[in-house]
Image (cartoon, rainbow, N blue to C red; front, side, top):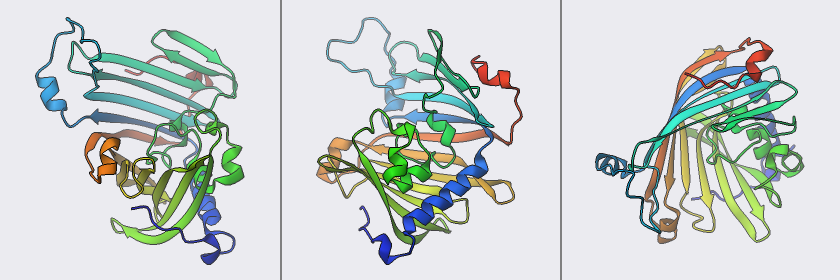
Length: 304
């Protein structure tokens, strides 16, 4: 259930949410230069049965038949270094019909130009392109959606800071965001600050994100719940948890496992939590303060 709002004025001056957003921003800066590789596995509950009964690609599915991805395995490497970044993605997705599809993608910024590579070639674009979500890891890792293109600290601060962020362009146009400190709590033995963030459109609050931020682990989210109010304000659409925290250097923590559960939204109004799919990410390697040559951030060669 979405926690009730406690006004910031009743908690602290300056507003408590501003203090928390500032603490998150300070800790985000500690991860400024980072080279991380992780593997993500997406699965639907019926994946085992569907993949075991694999169908040939021909004949093609009948009109109106939807071929859902049952399983996908993706390897991602993201590198941030002195204002440059490079993200490469490669994987396969499987519907259980024919052979699995393979895909790859890369985006890199060398400080001047952003380059994008897809299966059909390479495209150079201007410097104002919003950075991919991986540019804001690890703090953004536990955010529910893949659509965010702005730091967690800006998401928590909301207001003018969020509205000025280039990453809110597109699907977030016309919406406002505001955050409230809800409570202090202990989760998995870790003292946390619980923060609620509302995304509001013309007809009211659309989504609510509730973050459990670990005060002793760089204010990284231990848990995030996302509520889609058009379907339910009491049952979450998505739940993300972070675990297996490792201290990569004294005082700097990184979660090596992230698990996300997404529920069927049409079941939520019936007060039922029915799993749509799960996603599990595991860190394969992490290096602080990488030192790659500038040419690395112009190279869009797929990772092996």
